[in-house]
Amino acid sequence: MTYRTTVGWSLITSGLVTLLLAYLPGESWMWGIGLLVLGIVVFVVRR
Image (tube, rainbow, N blue to C red; front, side):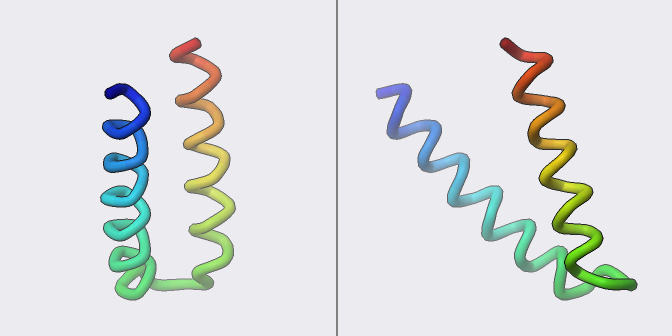
């Protein structure tokens, strides 16, 4: 059950981020790296 919820949220989040990156100014790879770092920080803090 938890696995399914995690996969669902992951897919929803990645879809939203993809849409967001299309509209954000600047280089998309910079936003990608920033969001990746933010995700890692959130993951480490929640553990």
